Structures are given as structure tokens and as C-alpha cells.
Image 1 (cartoon, rainbow, N blue to C red):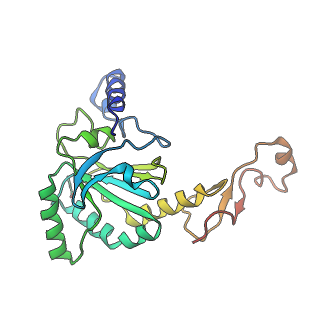
Image 2: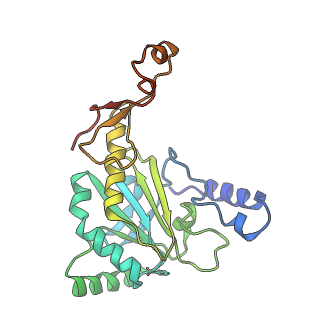
Image 3: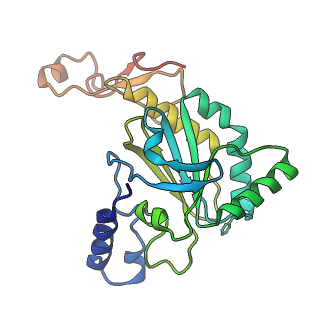
Length: 236
Ligand code: BEZ
């Protein structure tokens, strides 16, 4: 179940923060960190009643959007619906969330289907009380309106948050970058390897740097001991 303790921690931290609106608005994720267990919740969605923990065993991209029937959000949902098979190929489910009601979600999906000829089949959760949005830091307790920001959580098959991003309402997310992040997370999960900047599947990964001084001195060139490519890891 979704954890109230985290919300309390978050509120406490907000109170401790330096005075001033800017400082109080810097917390991106209700205290959630990479490596934390994603707080569980049950909710109504466009795909029926769902529970986050039922997604264990698969990757999950859980993401919030500010509101239904808004321009940027509509482009994101069209793009994600078009890319749904690519997420599925990576054994990754998609789950969206906003404060709007289930019937607003239905009406929006019908409009998207009729206008863009694409059916959004991944679940969109209704979160009218923002209880989930606040637990995940998609909306902060002192926010003046109920719109969630564009927060994305990459959750692994054990239910652990492996990456998160936060975009403002006026900038849409990149579906290719979401897929690339997922590819990189899946590649590094399989071994002691690292994904370098701009890494794409098929490109070399990096080895973990050595923690032994002997390896530092034995390395052929200056950088080999800490920066060396490897073909290990997942190749797609
Ligand atoms: C949009 O999706 O276009 C949007 C949503 C909320 C505020 C501003 C823009």
C-alpha cells in the first residue's frame, strides 16, 4: 500500500527548508530516491482496477501528466501509444496518472482515437484526491493547483525505482529518450557495466573502474583503469 510515512517525511523536510518560495519548491519527488521501493497503491484506471504491485516481474514506466485535454499531453499520449509495442518488446508496461476523473480519461481517449486514429490501451489512473501524486512528488502539498508535473518513474521488476525524470507542463517528454533510458537501465542491470553518454543499444558499454592501485599502475595507458569500453552487457 502507498506509504503515508513518506508523505510525512516530505512535509517535515519542506518545513525545514530555507525560507522562501523557491527553496520550498525544489523537492522533486516527495523524498523518493533512486533505489527506493515504489510506493504501492490501488486505483481505478481506464484498464479497470489496478494495483502497482501487480506489475512486479515486469518493468514499469509510471508517469504523470498535468491534465487531460491539453495540447502537450495529447501529443505525449499519441507518441506513447504509437510506441507501446516498443515498450512491450522490452517487457515494460506503461501506466499514466493524473488528477482527472476516470470519465474525463475515457472522453479524452475517445477524442484521441477519433482524431489521431490510435487507441491508448495502457492504463490511465484517476487520482482525484492527489493521494498518489503527492506520495510520488508529482504534486507538492503547497502547490496552488492540482495539476501534476510531468514526472516519470522507471520501476524495475522488483518494484525498485531505477530512474526518474521531471519535466514542466510546457515541455513534452521524448519517447525515444524514454526507450533509451529503459534500454540503458536494462543493459547495466545485467552486469558490472555502465552506460556512457548518448549510449544506444548495440554500442559498447563501459567497465566498472578498478578499485585496486595495482590495476592503476598496470594499465597500458592513462585512462584504461577507469575508462574502458566493454562489449559485455545486453546487446540489442
Ligand atoms: C499541455 O499539456 O499542453 C499543458 C498542460 C498544462 C499546462 C500547460 C500545458
